[in-house]
Image (cartoon, rainbow, N blue to C red; front, side):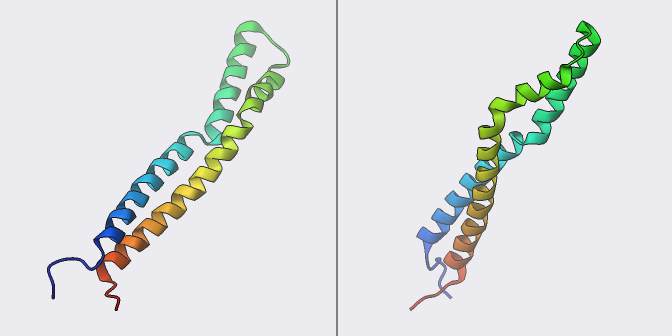
Length: 101
């Protein structure tokens, strides 16, 4: 058996895809909606306790409105990141084991 790999370009591009996919997936997890909703609810509860506001739930929902696009992009980048990880692992596997003609 030869000591070199059959397709080093596939392996290096697969490693690059895995790294980019992990970075996208990590960013998407930090921008998920549950964290933003929890922080807006916490801020509304603190405002209600401190300032005595009655309609603090409306304030919390208004704070989330500008973040719709960011959350949608976070979901999209999470899916793209996951697919890049799978494609990168496939390219690494094929670069190591695929012999070709």
